[in-house]
Image 1 (cartoon, rainbow, N blue to C red):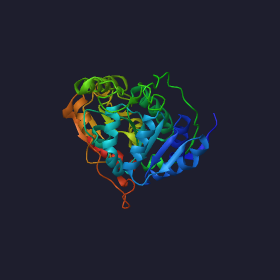
Image 2 (tube, rainbow, N blue to C red):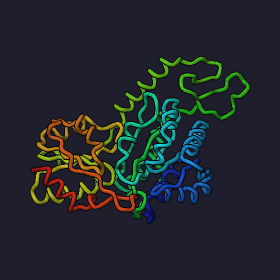
Image 3 (cartoon, rainbow, N blue to C red):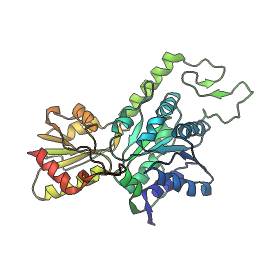
Image 4 (spheres, rainbow, N blue to C red):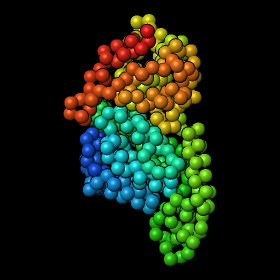
Length: 354
């Protein structure tokens, strides 16, 4: 293993390139800007193209076009910019065009955006929320694999801590197994032959093929996302078997919760923690098992209560669920406020566990 000291933006850029990403575009908005800058430095040397788009809408549509031509492609922004991309993300999901979206958000207030979406039609977006930079390196490569496996846009949900923390990482290409052939790509080889292809909702396949029609296509898309929901749930948990209190948290905040809960356990408190790694599909069955014996299920997230809805749906006893997070934003508006401090988290957990 050879460790290199990189911040999160550089580490994710290296991981994307190692995964075969050769087209990247985005519009600079902090804390996403660092990833865009690193891709502009590193991707051309790997034979790829990185463009600073004039807007988020242009960026995501350029990415959709590159992906339709068969490239491993990605784009990103923070939550405000992702909001402008929602229509194109929905189009990609419904047209089965795979690419990766990096949402390096300013806080944790984009959970609904990532898991519910803002586009049209029946679609969902696989969303991974790494807790630290080494995991972000793994998740970046995994997301390119999942995008191609399921022919769908996918999302990495990060934040300033993930984007700007500098740690030692070992970025090596990872093999996640075989993938289906991209025999659907618009590479120009079929033009004028009667075998030309197009990607557009229900008119899939050859240009002179009527396709399955609207009803058949929408049914197939719905069935696909049901399969994804069953196959791709990921989570972490610890000390839940005998826990009277289980704390649920996601992303980088979950790493703080893990630290605080370990300290409380050492003091004799019967507390465990649960982390959804996939925000969608949410690991509901695992959460139900983890909370079966708990008197308290505490939700810590840095917003007004968004993952809270999913925890209430899936906890063994929804009446045991209590919210111990809250809105906490720095004066700059670009990072977290004081609620992410370990003493503040400890106080919230102990207060909720009584």
